[in-house]
Length: 113
Length: 113
Image 1 (tube, chains in turn red, brown):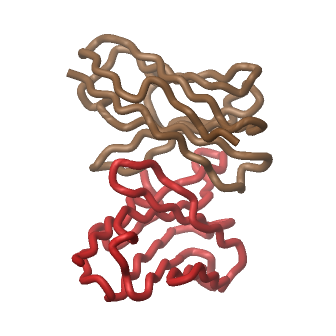
Image 2 (cartoon, rainbow over the protein chains, first blue to last red):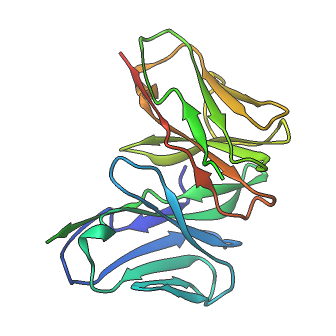
């Protein structure tokens, strides 16, 4: 089953409010990737974090990788209606003797204008 | 560069039938992964092909199979369709190493009646 947990499952905010989604793994991740899927679309790569404690920023988006490389977060400052979509984290885990990219179930963000 | 293409985009089948989906990766990409996306289970990894060889496999029954051709195009087949196979099937290609970002295609929406 899934070993990458993502919370919350849904988040509704007013435009201008901040938003954070959290990703946790029971095992150490070699790296973590974040994707965004707009309604009716397909996942689009946002960023990859590799180093322990790494922090990366893309305009209003801030991505963090935990010191133990077991958790990560995506924070959006001052949300806009264009931020609507589902945000997925994905980490490489060893399952059944091989390494696979395992996705969290995603956080669906809706923004009220 | 053209993106990942998937055909067909929509498909309606009945229980017991079989289906074949096709994916053409980005030119130069040799790795193709397949995912099943459903509202309840999120994005679940089916299998990955690299240079015509299955490199990784998810936890799906043997009814789900795939292959990759010498031009890196990939197909996945689902036999003896069940209602629960209704989903969006996404194909993703990667350049070089498996730790690179995944480029997703638009998906094939399969409905099983």
